[in-house]
Length: 220
Image (cartoon, rainbow, N blue to C red; front, side):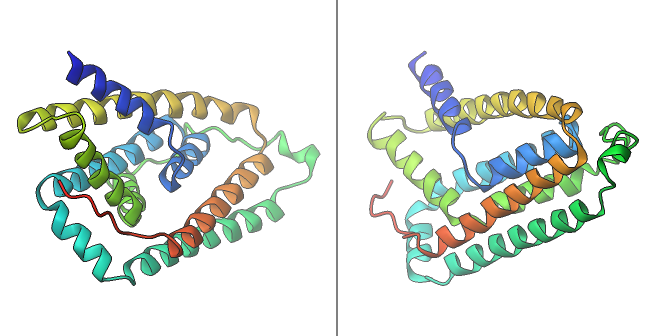
């Protein structure tokens, strides 16, 4: 029972963290609807699961690899900066193309007619989360804490983190569900501002990664 409770609490804690994936997930739910955001979130959680398994079995080697190859963080940071810049420019151009206020009412902002490409969205979610070295470092630290502080071993780790990811997914579904409902209250220019804000957040995270120390001294 303690394992289940700790797993749920950790999952809720993770759902409250604000990283690049969080902002992209909320933007997608608002602009493209619940289903699109759900597939994006599946991709994010798959990358979390991959990093988690890697952390469980080869954490020491991964930590050494990240520490010895310092330019990894600059590659990841540059990718975020490029994505963020592209989002800002794209939404700025869209903002300038929006008709005047009296014509906005005629525009249909419903997400019902948006074509959903599940595999593309899953791949996007996986990529956005996977290129952030901080995600891998976080899971290494989480595994270290679970084994050394909570004294969870063997299959207990799989149950613990399985419950964690399941809880995270359930909370994410609630977030994207309520975020998707906001679209009916937003005008087209509001959506462009949201896209620009998300782009700025990704740009900021890219800069932050440049100055991030990617080294964890603890070993599992």
